[in-house]
Length: 168
Image (spheres, rainbow, N blue to C red):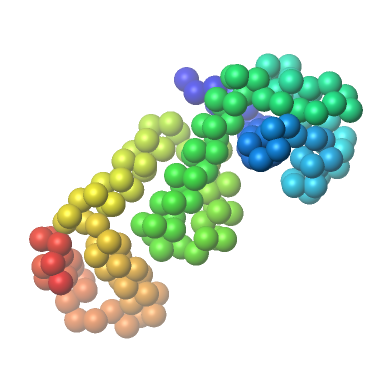
C-alpha cells in the first residue's frame, strides 16, 4: 500500500508545493505556500498541521516548513506521478503542456499504483521500441486530427500499411 493512499488530494497538492519550494529554496514558508496555491493562510495552517501529525513535515507556527525524510519520499512519489502523467499526455497523446499539466494534477490523485506503473512502462515502450517510437506517435497524432475533423483518408479504418514494421 502506497503512503499517498491515506492522504487526500488536497494534502498531496500541499506536499507537492512544499516539495517544489524546498527543492528551490531549501525551506517553505506559509505565505509562499498560500501564494503558490491561491489559498488563505488559515487553509495552509490546517494543512500543515495535518501533514505534521502524519510526520510528513516539520512545522511550527511562524517558522519555516521542511519535509521529513518520509515526507520527502511521499512528495517525490506524488511529483513523479504528476510528471509521468504529464509526459505521457504530451509525448504520447500529443496534448499541449498546459492541458496536460492541469489534467495530470487531477488524475495523479486517483490513479492506482499498478495503473501508474503500466502507464510509465507503456510510455517507455513507445519511446524505445523501433516498431512504435516517434513515427507511431506521429501517426497517432494524425489519426486524432483526421478523426476529429471527420476527414479520415482512405484506408485509415485500420493500421496504415507498413506501420506494423515501423515503416512509412
